[in-house]
Image (cartoon, rainbow, N blue to C red; front, top):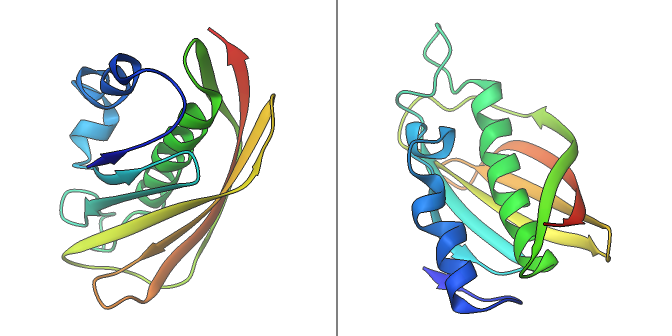
Length: 141
């Protein structure tokens, strides 16, 4: 995992290490592969995150999107600050029924008080499953 961004290494380890223990991120099997304030990449298994018809649950895509967008925003905010999601939207383009989906969050705005990320979620064939946008407010801790 590549960790880059403002803040000291201890705060970055806190963000990615024990911070996800016993959380929704852990229960859904989300694995962060790469993380910087500009771009965050993670993957999530489809199995265990489906709706009753065996398709990836749209809410699971939103959880993946919010997880990686918020991670980027927290890295952008830096040490001593927090990022809180205030708006998310998602368009579901196709279903996924097996394997993993990969989410890539790219920063489109990074200010002092607000950060916005575009998130693209694709299946193992590189086909777009979901497009999302997340806006976070940045606050002092």
